[in-house]
Image (cartoon, rainbow, N blue to C red; front, side):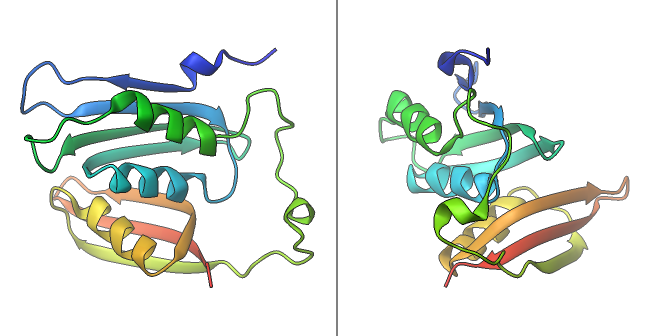
Length: 161
């Protein structure tokens, strides 16, 4: 039972040189998975132009639209896929996450960080990058964009320190 490992992470190259590459992750959910995936994508020198996170608390479907920061470098897409697979929970594992498995007996405090501003290309990437550099873990993210191009981003974060 479960899905094949080849279908957990899918990378679809853009048709043109300016088209973004679509990275899809479809696996059981766990706390901090979105943060881990974003960190890996950023470490590979990619720029997240858009993202869509869907979860029911047990299973998640995440889509990233990414572009290379520098077209002169050759990116190893297979290595990126392998790194994303490593942090994704196995599809045959139980669909729950127990904090006691990590040696922690108490759940970390979750803080709500709210951004209300005018939307722009790369805003989610920039906020995620800063939170990652500050060693925050994004537990959940809710992104809402209004028709008049305003955005409300709700980040549920824990302090990694």
